[in-house]
Image (cartoon, rainbow over the protein chains, first blue to last red):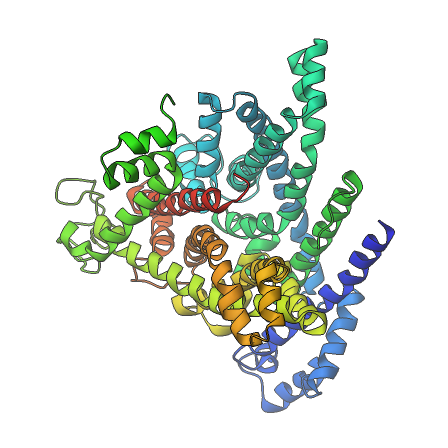
Length: 306
Length: 289
């Protein structure tokens, strides 16, 4: 167990170094001269050259990467071309909106996905099971921005119940959170169903039934507790796809989070922002995956990811 | 079921009956395969299903409601939405073929090489794959598209790149499993060349799971491509790509819902088809069942 954690822990910085190198190289391959972009369209050649020296673009690529990595570790991700503000500040300002949306969506997905999966397992092969499975597979097949458009059209435009765009009140959370929750909800329902089916077939469940334990208690405390491992796996390992979903959802709803910031900055070629947001998002995913793997290893010593 | 498998086959009148029985017991493959089959046929023979041109604008008949003449209505430029959705299927299927094809061509050899050689080569390849895998697919695609420029082809390259690790990991695991099989060990000790072992002994037996994975990836490809085109980072107007069509439709919420409704339904039916088919194929190939 200790060796496993140590191995995983040592792999973590290696992955992050690789990720930062990939982002760094990709951004350097962007068309256009960053120095000219930073200096502005009317800058003189001298101003552009000064900017190039200031950005360190006249140094070797290895030196530049060192500078970038050193800055990133100290929490300095450069300056936005568009707003002239530090990238870190831009991200910090929007991060609460993205995290708030992601957490709401995950809670929603768990609150509906877990009971739905349990119903599927309990009434296996019956109509409730088929309904749950159908909804789960449909949920995994829907484009979330399409669902967003349909919901906006119905609840915001036609009925006027909910705000259309932006984050103005708690009501603003409803549609984006539901949109973002659909895919994880479908995945969680499927995972819960299949792991519950497996658990319900075990001997100790039969013993509990024979002892006369109430069915509700069997399902909620005996079975669900053991079915939790796959659910933790899914929630932790799918954090990346949730972030991906947030990028799209935030753009549809004009949500002031880091996902929309990323999409907007591609349009403005604001490369320090693209670089910073990508690095922060991937680091978050890597750390979440690591925590999920640790939680799984702690819950079930039989499982080792190799 | 009252009759056993053997009785049914014995009493059946030959191949057709057996085929029907097989289809009835493999619902996923029947339903999913049927859906995808219909979509492929409709995409190929699109001109047979509509006489409208997906690109021709008619500014005198914009934003029409669905009717006999325009089954899905018309968009803001007076183009027939049904024709655009139908021709859009060609684009989406092409997205699948190109992106999945590229990911398989790159990922599978890397995975087999990794599994066969082991040690440093293995670690280096898997390190690269872990790095790519750490990125949320959409985020990596945005990064790549912002470097290559926004176009459908660049988007497909981006999607292929983020799908590569899936195939590399899958084929590596398959290779490790197959390498331990007696017939491969026998071939190695008989002196069969490495190259021949990789192609004839490993690849051939890994094809089943790779096909299952491709079917399941197909849905992701369509959804990702549509999402990025919707954000303006993929297919550009006037291409009738489903996501790009919804990007237009987004500006007319409350005025014309059909511009967004039908492309989204098309995405759902197609992705659903691939997912059901993939699940069915996986169950078929899963030796545990």
